[in-house]
Length: 496
Ligand code: NAP
Image (tube, rainbow, N blue to C red; front, side, top):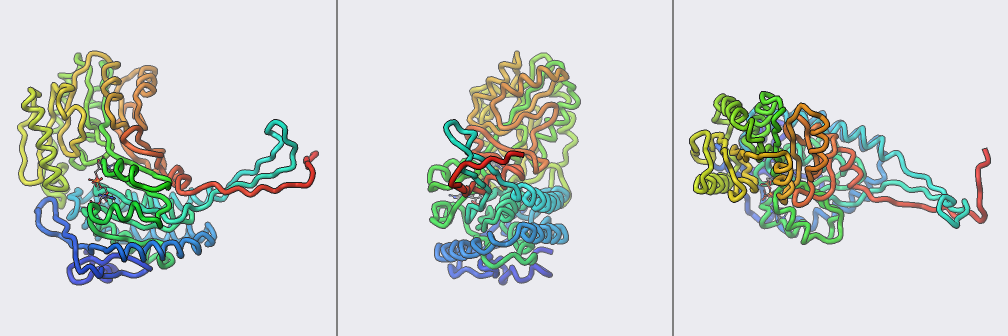
């Protein structure tokens, strides 16, 4: 159970502590932040509202710990990460319980998120050992006018202190996807978990604590992003920001100082279905892609662009599958569960009402109880409707009927979001052409968009992000290049 057994020390009364300098602490603010259970709308957990002074101290100790950590051999850093991965898997039950209660993640998916996170940490440890053990050796005589009298040794070195800010929908997985590449590369990490998902995040951090990482190397600050976020992102102690979330990321990138940014933001992933597609396959992926975790995935299918001639058949196949989705509590593994908050449910409802007023066809009756919204497919959506462009982050999916693939590509490229997209066709040549024409970070051929497997490159273009994630890219992103040049008194060539 959450907050019991080895996790007992992370709880003070009914408020979870924050983590600094290798210890679990109660904030001097005397204030806490309540976390509502999305399904019951009752207070489920409370976390500390950390003060600016506490944040300052955290950055100080992170800086000091990082200098020492950078001198720890790579294999030892990897060993510690493997230990954390094993602990995470061993304690998957309490973490999964938090995910169910804090973000209404269906129980089975909650367990998979934790297990996947353990695997991600181990893979990162292995990948880090390999890619960080290699550098470059360059000779000067390849550049015109030079002799071979300069030898350059370049290697990847840590950035310093990485500020990691994950979103509510994968508070464990998207936290470790930042923490583990940062640590293997020799950085320290300050984690600011999402408020919904903070307690799952604190349990995860405790697994790193139990794995024996040095004091101050990893810390976890809790509090509302709207209150403490700016202080964190503009803190002079930050050497890199790795953020996943919504438009907040755009605001952060404007405020941040001159530090590397990794931004994974929202998406409006389009699913283009051509006339020669396997419609059963397409329908199955539209439903899985559009409605898993109630549509609260950055890579959810968020608009279906179907060629008119097959649209009726596709819609009818999708509707048949929607009818089988279960709606209810995450504890019961329902397919559709409450969305994260009332404001999120209200936002989704706003998009639905706008589409209704402008004449879209509802394939199911719109139904909402509290934060629980029943799955809805909205057909005949047109470009003047908000649903055509905005990200509902809920179980509501628009269908736009198109005459040509070009029309679908045009719609996809006209959106500021450009995370992923997908195309369904039996013609691989056509699929490649469409993939090249869709200006998004990734295009999936004959499958719904997806972030995993976690070692694949993952990136958004335009307003969907800066940089690329995926284990290897994240490790590289969290390093900088350092060169040492040996200047010889005279040119020297190895004759062989
Ligand atoms: P969000 O509202 O942007 O919040 C993300 C994180 O930012 C949370 O930890 C939040 O903390 C924090 N935050 C809020 N205000 C801040 C500020 N001023 N400065 C610094 N941090 C601040 O996003 P969300 O609602 O959690 O997640 C949904 C969004 O994430 C969707 O748009 C989705 O598409 C996107 N997403 C993208 C990816 C991807 O990889 N591209 C993956 C998953 C989700 P609080 O919770 O305390 O406010």
